[in-house]
Length: 371
Image 1: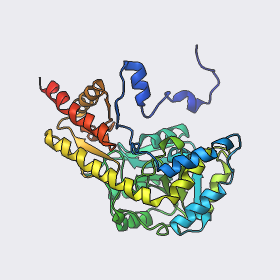
Image 2: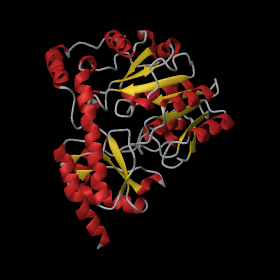
Image 3: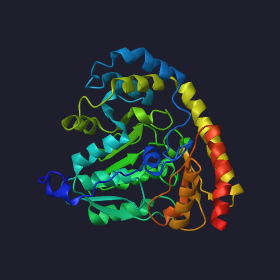
C-alpha cells in the first residue's frame, strides 16, 4: 500500500533510511544467529550491578511519567562535572539531542559542515530538517581540524559537527587542540562537539568540563550508552551555556525520558569504581582485538574508543567480504561506509567469550578470501 500523498515536499524527497542495520535485522533477513555481538559499539560488559539493582528497585514506578524537568539527573551531573546544573541538558541519547540541535539551528538550505564518513545519524538529521551538508575528507584517518575550520568559514556554515574521540576510526585530538579549534570557529557558527567516547579515551584528549562553557556557539554532547553500558536506556546530555541548555525546552519532548533509564543513569554516576574497572576492561579488550588483527596480517589503528578500526588491506569490497564472512560464522561487526575509510572493518570491545569467537572466525574468513 502506498504512503499518504500529502507529506511535506522535503519528506517526499527523502529516502526511507535506517542509518545502521541492526543485528536483529540481519538475523531476520539472512536466517543467521548472532553469537558475538561486537559491531554496534555497545558495551558488552554491561552496566554496573548496582545499576541493575536500582532499575529493579524502581520498576514498580514505571506507571509514572519521568520528571519532565529531569531535575535530579541534571543536579547529579552538575555535581559530577563540577558545574552548575543550568549548564546541563538531558535527552534521549546523543542521537535524540543531535536531532534537537539541528532543529534549533537549521532551516531549509542552510549549510552544515561535517567530516566525510563521520557519524551518519547526524547527516540523517541534517537531511530531515532540510540542511545542506558539506563534507571534509579525513586526513590520515583522523578528522581534519584545519579542513573543517576552513570549510566552515568559506561556506558560512550555521553548524559544524566534530566527534572527539572519533567514530568510525577511533582517532582523537588532544584537549588543547580541540579547545583551540572550538575557539576559532566563527561566532555565528554552532559547534557540536560529540564526546560519546570521552570516558574510554586518554584523559589528555578531554577538555575540562568548564573549558568551553563561556562559548555560546559550542554544545558538547555525552552519553551513558558507551562506558556506562546503557545503550538501550537512551540517556544523553549536553554541556553548554545555560542559555543553550534552556533552548531545548522550546522543542524537546518533555516526557521523552524513560523513568527507569533515569534511575539507571543516577545509579551509574554513583558507581565510579565500576566505571573505572570497565574502562580498564575495555582497554584490555581493545589491545586483544588489535593483537588478533596483527596476528592475521591486518593493521589495527590506534583507538581511544570502545572499538578498533582495522585496515583490512584492500578496499571496501574486501572489507565487506570480511564483514559478511564473519556474520556467516555468527560474528557481527561493522565497517565504515565511505571510501577510503571503508577499507577498514570495525570491531567493538567485549567479553572474552565474544572476542574468542572473533579470533576463531577471522582466520577462517581470510583463508576463504585467499582461496
